[in-house]
Amino acid sequence: MMPPLVRWSWSPVCLATMLVLAGCNSPTKVDEAEKDAAATTTQDDMTAKQVVERMVEVYRTANTYMDSAVFGPHFVRAEDGVKRQGVPINVAVLWKRPNRFRITRIEPTADGTDMAAAAVVVSDGTQLEGAVSWLEPQRLRLPAPEVATFETVAPDPLLAKALFPVAMQDIFPQLALLLTPKDQTPWPLATPSKLVLLPSKSIKTQDQPVPCYRVQMPTSVGPQVLWIAKQSFLLLRVEITNEELQKQLYPHDEFNKFVWQFDFYDVQVNAPASRDLFRLTPAADGGEPKVVTVFEEMETTEASDPSDENPAAETDGEQAGGERASTESDTGSDSPDNPDDN
Image (cartoon, rainbow, N blue to C red; front, side, top):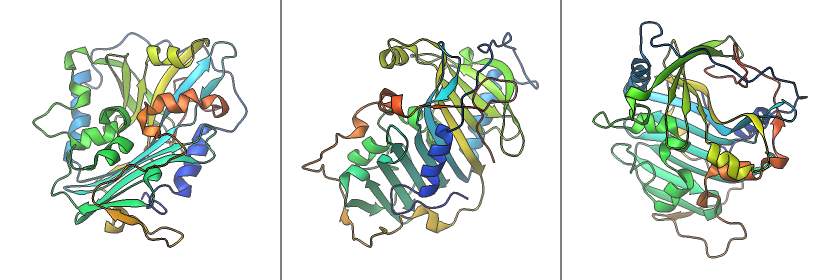
C-alpha cells in the first residue's frame, strides 16, 4: 500500500524511487531500433477499440485505485547507441469513490538529488486540504466535495495550476480515466476508428513479465502507445512521440529513439485504503501552517513558479546533468525495463 507523504509534499520513498529510476549503472549498448511487425486487426478476439473500452471500464467501475507513476524522456542517442532516460517527474494517485483522494506531483531538481517543487491535494471525505511548495506556509482547507470531479479535486486556481500545468490527461492520464463521467468520452476513445493494435509485448517486473496489449492512438503532436496489461486491463505505460518538442529542446542532437514515457508502478484497484492515507501529515518541524480557503500568490519569491511551463520541457531542458544510462530492457523489446504492476 502506498505510504502517506511525509509532511505534505514528498516522502523519502518517492524520492528514492525517482533516483533509482533515473539509473546509476554502467551504460549498455542497445540493439537496432525496434521495428514492429505489421499491426494486427485483432488479438485475443478483440479489436484495438475493444481493448481500450475494456481498460476504460476498469477505471470507471473501480471503487479504489492507487499507483505511483513517473513521467520523463527515454532516448537513444545516434552517436553512441546507449539507452538513457532523464530525471522524471513523479506523480501519484490514491483514490476511493465518491470523494476520497490523494493526488501528488513532485518535480525533482535537474540532477534528481532533491525536490524542486511539489503540490498535493487530499480529501478524506469530510475535509479537503492542499499544499504547494512555493506557496508555503499556506495550507488550503475546505469542506470535501460531495463527489470528486474534474472541477472539485483542485477547487483553488493556484492549486489546480500547480497540479495540472497542462491538460489533466497529459500529466495524470490515470486520473482523467477515473474522473471522466459515463456520459462523456474518455481521452483514449476520442478517435476510436484510428486506434491500431501493435504486436503485444511484456513489461518485465521484479516477479515476472506482464504481457501487455499495445494500442497506438493519434494525437495532434504525434502518436501515443498505450501499454495495457492483458490480465487486468490496467494502464501500465504510455509512450508519447512529440518530435516538435524534441527538436525544440535538442536542436543539435540526433536520436535513434526518443519518447516521453509514463510508467505506472504498484497499480491496484479495489484494494483496502485506510482513511488516514487521505489526510496530510503534520509538518516534521512541528510548525503550524497558515490555513486559508483561497491560496494567495507569494509577494516575494527567488525562484520562478515551475508550473508556468510544460513540466516535460522543464525537466528535459535541464536534464543534461541529470540523464542516466539504463541497463534494463523489456521482454521482447528494446524499451527500458520498469517494475510495473507489482
